[in-house]
Amino acid sequence: MIAGADPRIAVVGLGYVGLPLAVALADQFETIGFDIDPGRIAELRAGRDRTREVDGPRLEASPLRFTSDPDKARGCDVFIVTVPTPVDANRLPDLRPVIGATRTVAGLIEPGRETIIVYESTVYPGVTEDLCGPELERLSGLKRGKDFFLGYSPERINPGDKEHTVERIMKVVAGENPQVTARLADIYGRITIGGTFRAASIKVAEAGKVIENAQRDINIAFMNEITQIFSKLDISIWDVLDAAGTKWNFLKFQPGLVGGHCIGVDPYYLSYRAQQLGHLPDVILSGRMTNDAMGEWVADKLHARCDGRCGEVLVMGLTFKEDVPDLRNSKVIDVIRRLDALGHRITVHDPLADPYAAMEEYGLTMEPDALDRRYDLVLVAVPHARYKAMTPKQVAALAVDGGLVADLKGIWRHQAFPKRVERWSL
Image 1: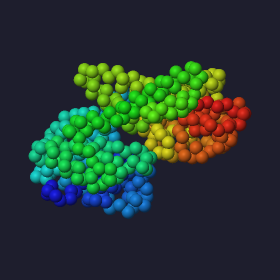
Image 2: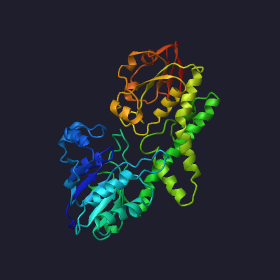
Image 3: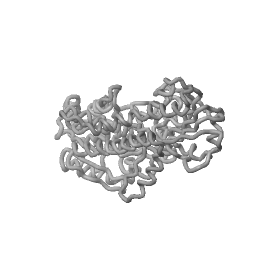
Image 4: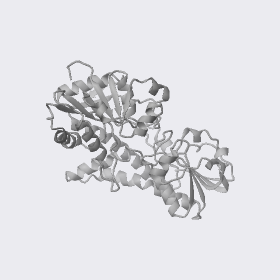
């Protein structure tokens, strides 16, 4: 890379993180967006983003070049890896996407270019330098620190959040030496008004990211635990939070189903590394255990409110959070599976979820006419804007006489419902 010259950049992985980043970079630099899914590339070229993170007009106006052919990215000066970092069935880190992307990049870097490979995927401290770096050297035959350099800049995308976008947030950057850090600060500083923060090292940047979500997870676990305690006292958690929230330094977390690709996953990366080092992370694992069990607890509460009678159940909302189409690691499925195991017959509706993704991910059939029928139990599990716009009368109309309307997040808790239905909330 010629000092001071604008780099040619390739973003590897065009999901919730990679696509907004690549679009922002393309406004400043020659940028290639690479994804292994040809179908994803085809829809992006047509101006459609299934994640809804980038709208059609912005996508069509972008100079970003899309490809599923890795050879098109050969010889780029900077590669930014933005692939998922899930956990496996045993809740252990699944680094296959990161290692797969690393192997792809290893075949594209060229000697003499001083290429920078930046990872944005959330990992435990050490993955970038101790796993990815040696793999790049092994497969490329090139020398780290001479032919290529490593960097890390943790992603901070919050799906559905139109305020904290990549163009507005502070970006943490770290390189394997001060020169690489400075280069990354310049690149990322050109695309965000939030500025950049130069972390002390790559491992520090990795650690900073992984504790951001672990901290939220633990705080929400506390809320879920006290929700369960107060339910035994017949106290509404929402009333409790209203009272406690009047103190100036009370942290306003809320209870709920903690899913998604970040908060429900990242603590397992940190706990895995901790145990490798011989430390049992009691607080982290306790929080995860509480949050992982919340879906079944909700289902059992609803079953008890139905006096143990099985019936027709409508579950409104399947995505991991409101107003996004993202189904990854949604904890609504835990409620559904438990209710199904208890003998209830489940119908699922979600205005944003992709029916094909719901079938592929969870084996569920989405029913577009689900809101045209009546049920013994109506559970509003995800407070999508479309559901919030419904009046109590409209929601109650979905339930049979004497049926139960379960408002998980307390959307309508200050509003009166027709007396012919019962109500429940946390």
